[in-house]
Amino acid sequence: MRSSERTPSTTAQPERFSASRHRSSQSASDACTRGSSSLSAPTATAESKQLRRAYSPGVAAWKRCPQPSLDWAALEAVVLSSHDHIPFNRAQVVGREQAYIAEAISRCQLSAGGKFTGLCASWLERELGCAAALLVHSATAALELAALLLDVEPGDEVVMPSFTFVSTANAFVLRGGVPVFVDIRPDTLNMDETLVEDAVTERTKAIVPVHYAGVACELDSICATAARHGLAVVADAAQALGSTYHDRPVAGIADLAALSFHETKNVTSAEGGALLVNRPELCDRAEVLRDKGTNRNRFFRGEVDKYSWVDIGSSYGLSELNAAFLWAQLEAAEELTQDRLRTWRTYHEALAPLEEEGLLRRPIVPDGVEHNGHIYYVLVENLAERTRVLEALNRRGVSAVFHYVPLHSSVGGLRYGRAAGPLPHTEALSDRLIRLPLFSGMSEGQKQQVVETLADTVRRRVPA
Ligand SMILES: Cc1ncc(COP(=O)(O)O)c(C=O)c1O
Picture 1 (cartoon, helix red, strand yellow):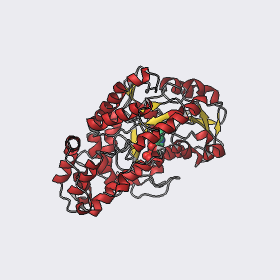
Picture 2 (cartoon, helix red, strand yellow):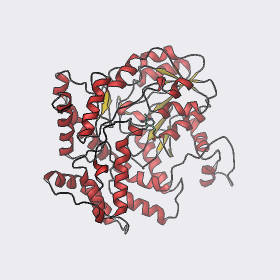
Picture 3 (cartoon, helix red, strand yellow):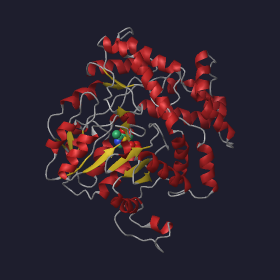
Picture 4 (tube, helix red, strand yellow):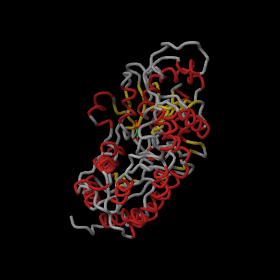
């Protein structure tokens, strides 16, 4: 492996533009295609043996599949190379992905709408209790589909937090909608439900809560405000598969909800997502809008004798190959989530003394909310300290990143949206946040290295 690929970046970036994320997947694919001869053999330390054990179930399943092009030695070297550099994220292969993809190929049905699409959709409907789950190629697509489905028109307002990923807003802006940004709560970093009512105007069409880090927003309050004003609730549940709100799956609460299966999420299809529809009267139209404005799905079900253009729409479906990958992951969703939660709890416990010393603040999860361990973050004192800590962590092989550049002060947010009022918590907390590496399959040694490096850094035991 080239030394430059293993040298941690000293410039931390937001998640989706993270140099570390791109570097780790780039180096993995480089290594797999270049072959083992160009790789230096990793030293078999106790740590590397532990890593080998942690990854062995997935890797063993890969080895059992007929796959002449896979270079096992190269793959293993990539896995073990994380000994001295902990990536921010690494997609976890659970074992059956290759077999299901091979099955999809053998059926010669590769585009959207095959057996695996059906299995995944039924699983989501059953587990989340929604009227319909439509697989799409991303949460971004799911949010765009929601905006189409609600007939968002130019000038319609959509209330949402500023502390979120750009797609939350962009999906509505594409229809001419105006994001109206409200502040977040300092405890959960979720949209402050007490500010929503004042942000509602005659032009408001929808409220869009974002369940940050898989921790549910105060949905009872938000849904009650929406009901009082006759507004739709579109939940950005991109990070929230597996989380609950008062014992109900969080992703199933709201008129519409968007899930993400992007590589960084707990359960992945590489790129992918789902729109969950909880209002039965919207289900048929949602399908049409997803399928290019045609009634193709009704045709496939034998309900009409030909399919044609019946409404507006676009091409949002998920390929059957991605759905096959996703089905393997959904079958293992519980284990993947529990594995993340173990890491989350390890961090939480180990960092408690640092919080007591006043060196950082740990996440707060309110009563009645069970999260899915998607993100572990800490809040340090201010932007200068965040910059210092991120630089030191990355220099010492721990890929940590920040989150988010608030939308209300970004170029796009200033052009297309407006703030409902002052957003002091959004501005202060987004400057202080650091996300730690968290992915399924982390070894105990990696977790310990993250904790120790962070502790040394915030206690200023590392050279500046
Ligand atoms: C809150 C939120 N919304 C939307 C998205 C977009 O997801 P996707 O990459 O599946 O389009 C993300 C992705 O990280 C996200 O975190």
